[in-house]
Image (cartoon, rainbow, N blue to C red; front, top):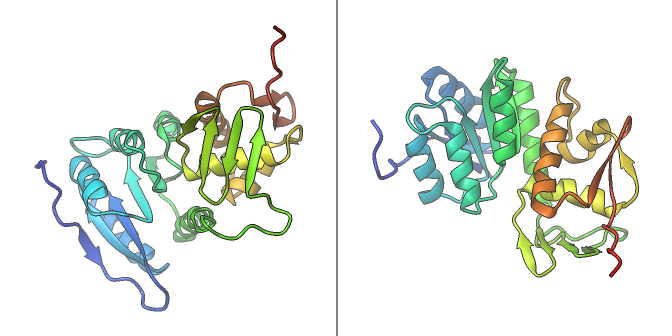
Length: 252
């Protein structure tokens, strides 16, 4: 039964070899939740669980900050898509890993469009789970990391300005709210304007993965990024991929 206040999340202890991260698992199937807890704890992580969407959303909002939310999309009560939408609308940039059923392509596309960072299709292997989670955390770990000698801290591309250390983006005077993955995707493009990137290259650079059938995820995130910064920056190169260009000023 849904309640208006989040219950204290169930927690499994993390492995003791490294400083653990905090992970919230929102999954209504007890066996799947237990499996996720056991394997995430080995990364290591302190894993908390909630069994329905509303309780999960309240736990995400009231018991954070979190280093990762693992979110099943088919939840009782408040669905996973609504949970994802609510978190992103509130400005929460926590990495979100969706769990979807095989063949539920529409759910995956909608989840990515709403701001989820990645997805796993059930059933999945333990190695795939660990690889996806570590890839998400590698991107987050770059926050505040000193730039390399040849890596700029800020980029200015016309009306668009990006700050790598703060992980913030402005379009003119207005700040644009991006997820971690969206920021990495934009930075990859804006650092090399005019270069055409294939989907495979973007998967290597931004997602740290080359899983089969994963390239349509690139399209979804690029569409979402275009919606946020405007369609004039990222152009489709037919037969190649995408490239970044500064919009040309219109003659007066």
